[in-house]
Length: 209
Image (cartoon, rainbow, N blue to C red; front, side):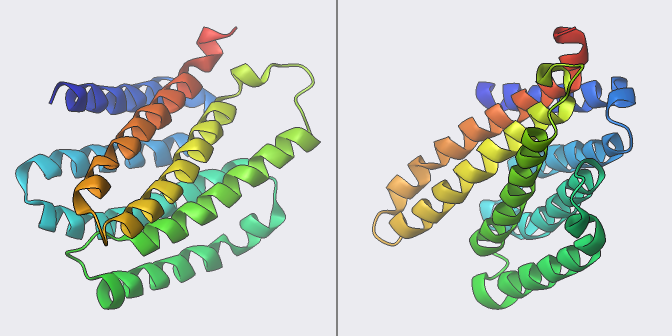
């Protein structure tokens, strides 16, 4: 419970930091605010309801998370394909996600397939951003003072890590469900890393100047 409290405080700190430093985030700060509020509601609801129903909420939370992260990258990437086709990418993901949730996995089971699909696309966004930084590095400022450098790094580590962890856990759960549950500690550690890097990103202008 103590670690969970630290986790919740970390998310709240991210919400406060992105709000108070919104001048460095331009239009994306609103998407971050919605994302952190949604994460808080989802995590806190897990304390009050049974895991079976928590899975149902997760089937609706994951598409919302994907939409918000897509909108964030739409605002920070120069890539013309994403800017032109995000209105195609998002509906296709939503249709696929809801199909998997209702007809393949079931709402009362973990939404592994749609999460893996969303993670793959988000990792692609993150890699495009890394390429753009490599192709056009900042000339008059440090990467350490770029909020999106930290945010993108967090996304890259988190979604790469959870992609392999969830895929591995789903495979192991067929023979050893106890071990699969124990591996969930990896996702918890990745969550701490993700929101810690987000927090550094929101505060980096003050930390590294």
